[in-house]
Length: 249
Ligand code: PGA
Image 1 (tube, rainbow, N blue to C red):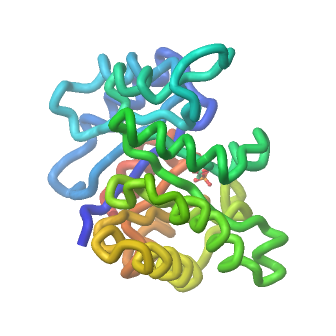
Image 2 (tube, helix red, strand yellow):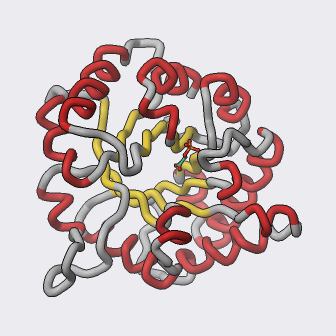
């Protein structure tokens, strides 16, 4: 059983003061009752500050929310994986549905981002999930298979150094969540797809659930066999709620 993992995704929220306030509060709230690994993906500009706020031996690891697929050069506005590694970034979200939908990021580029992240020593958190239309049309599994296949078809991807996140798009920020049973079925499906490529990786890989996870819903979701933790948006900015979710993992 891999160690459970809970990652907060702050999205485009925060400020200098909020970053230090929240991280100090989370750090002092992590006690023996919290057994999971804890990550926070903050906006780029707060990554260095996040590190200087937490202790060197902190149980919190810091991540970014996206990364460039390019190594360096004339890509105005982009941030490379090497740059993130240099400031001790640990995680990087890749293919969050807001990146896919609002910024038109496609599987081909997303797989290049995964490779760039892994080459720099970062751990990519590759996000997949179906839209409401796909869900209503019964196309959940097909959509997930298409998104995961892009990753599995590229043999350069190291499946042992990646985290997967299943986030139904219709559940993100809406207050709706997949039922534990629905989520478990998709997580199991993802693990089986990975297993076809690499049995060892399928056992090791952590598959997080995301989409309106709150303290109330966390326990039954995390109790599912193939749900190894959560990717938490809104509730990650509420210290008490985030710590309570971590405790349930
Ligand atoms: P949410 O966001 O918890 O606010 O639904 C999850 C995410 O977007 O990662």
